[in-house]
Amino acid sequence: MPSPTGRPRARGAVAVLLLISAVAYTAWVLEVVLSTGLDPVQAYISELAAADQPLGGLFRATDLVAGLAVLAAAGTALVGTAQVGTARRTGAEPVGTAHRTGTARRTGAPQPRHRWALAGWSALALFGAATAADSRLPLSCTPTSDEECAARETAGLVPATHTAHAVTSSLAMIGALAGLVALTVAARRYGWWPPVRRYGPWLLGAELLATTWSLAAIGAFQAGRGTWALGAGQRLQVLLVALWLGVLAWSLFREEADDRRAHDRRAHDRAAPTRDRAGREPV
Image (tube, rainbow, N blue to C red; front, side, top):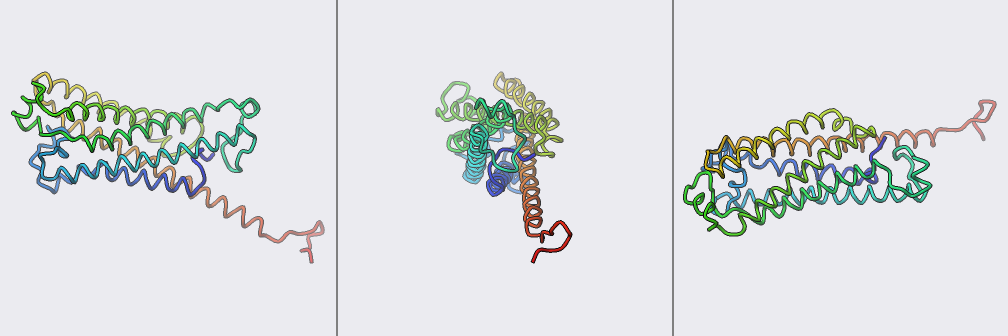
């Protein structure tokens, strides 16, 4: 059954935006071929975009693209979900949307699947907005590789953007995790998006482990106990979010293709010549 994300063209647009975001969100892999001077196993991933880094502008730009693309995708999906929900409550449900619930349609009560979808896309909108804000609030220096920077950060002598960056980064990850949970639940409960149903729980489990690793490593670093491979944990965390966005985009592409095939079959059936009861084509 199709998900309530609007018309097929809207679903295609959402899928493209999600794919763009997934690619831009993994721009940090360029450190494999570019000389950044940072240790990818130990350094915060945000340090690539620090204000004092020669390639900081590149990574800030890709973060901005990733955030704005997923924000636009979530906004488009939210509009489509709201429109379908309104149509069902008023009795004007579009042909081809998911199954109807008579009580909900008579009373105008929102259906549970719409609540899951709205929660999931809203969480992804938070992720996108926070990621875009994150790109505009870079660190001023690199605390994991610069002892002077780390000392200033501990003493509270760094710009306020360090604190703001920590807040937006946290909000971004909260939004990504909440979106992963809500949309995976919706897919499994209501028969949407086979790739999400299959891979969503595994990605969620891995993301929770990577997030736990990252939080523990950040706590250890701030307590002066080393980095605990902080960079590797954060990179895994971000990579899994990008994979999730890619799986969601793949699911929407498949759904759009299925809708197009169903539309073509209906058009073919309507165009087929009708026959009278005796089996003769009408004159």
